[in-house]
Image 1 (spheres, helix red, strand yellow):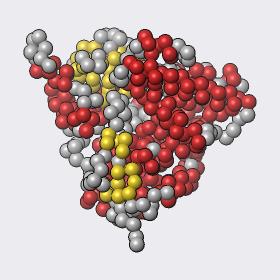
Image 2: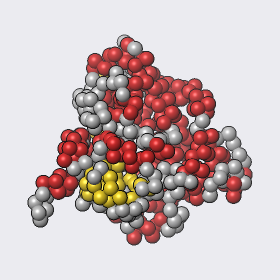
Image 3: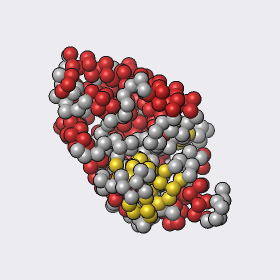
Image 4: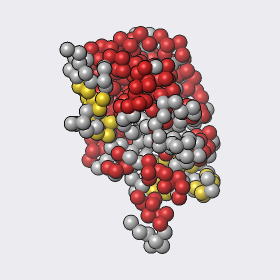
Length: 418
């Protein structure tokens, strides 16, 4: 598309579309051009200011006064009227840790600090290992599997259900509602689909409200009990609305992102035979390899921010009220931060600088759990499935989401001993 003044940079801005098939498959060539030619630009397609450079993204993450996290999960400031009509059946706003600024953020994060303490996470290792091996037992003799559908989806789903204290039997329903939440907040689907997803979103709200009411009557040793607000007889210094929204976010974030982390990480390893061999032979390389997976293929493309006052970022003037899309996916490939950034290197010395978990006060509170699940998953898969490889007769399929990056299907195969 050529604009009236014919500026090539406007053509480049118009060409940015993470939902286009070629950019779903490989967005990094586009990101390289953007970082060099239009590092901060307005996308006419999404009505968002897109931030692509590592340093600018880090500045936005650090400066919560100029760049608010309210609406961090929502591509649009206001939903479509038809969607809003359905959402009116629930809470007026989605109030979660990710979508809050200080002092609310500080108050809510303190609750999560207790709920996801290092001691609690470490104590989960035996259960994660048992769940991992139980899933592998179900297909180890088959010689092939869709890693996403039969493993990477179930493992974090079961673990977050256990952590919250809800039945594993509810996972399928909760996953469906989480998908509805993702589609709804991305606001790129047809309006009819967004309306349908809004009904799922409301159902998820009601589910967790009922679970919190149950915990207020009969406390348990689970995370939901720690989220019961003081107004409902619990200990958490948050409102009922905040408690419900944070439970929903925990379910989604603790599930979706780790599924993508495991799937994308395995795809990277199986696409690099020498690096796969090195990790197989020396599992001490795995922790750094996990960080390199997160750098190279982050599960979240990026989050949204709102500009609170007329300001300047990276030499670009931004008006108050503008909405930003801070692209972790591009920042993780910034050549000013990472040498040869498009190369997957499990021995990369600065892999931990990646943006996959965010920066500053919004650094992901669940990062230690995600990395523990990832470490155990890769240890067991690599040890138990010999000659692991991508299937050549069935292609991998990526997910077409604005915010999330990962695979919907990842067919793999291995040798089954006679």
